[in-house]
Amino acid sequence: MVAGMLMPLDQLRAIYEVLFREGVMVAKKDRRPRSLHPHVPGVTNLQVMRAMASLRARGLVRETFAWRHFYWYLTNEGIAHLRQYLHLPP
Image 1 (cartoon, rainbow, N blue to C red):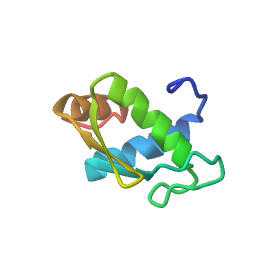
Image 2: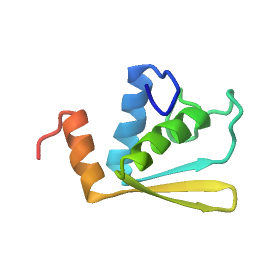
Image 3: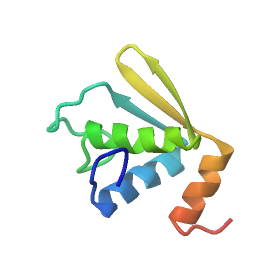
C-alpha cells in the first residue's frame, strides 16, 4: 500500500523504474483520476504523487513545488533502496 492508496505492483514498478533511470520525477498538480502522467505509460498523476509521497515520508526523495508542478529528486538512500527493490546490481 502506498500512502493510503492501493496500487498495482506493475504500475508502482514502472514509476520506480522511471525515477531510477532519470533520477528525477515531475508531475503536474492534477489530482483528477483520469489525468495520465506523460512520462509513465498507463499511470495517473495521482498514483505518481502518492508513490512519491511514500518515498518522501521515508526520506528517499526530496520534494520541490513550483508553478503547479511537483519535482522529486532521488537521495543517496533512495538510490540504494530502489536498487534493492528493482533487484539491480550495486
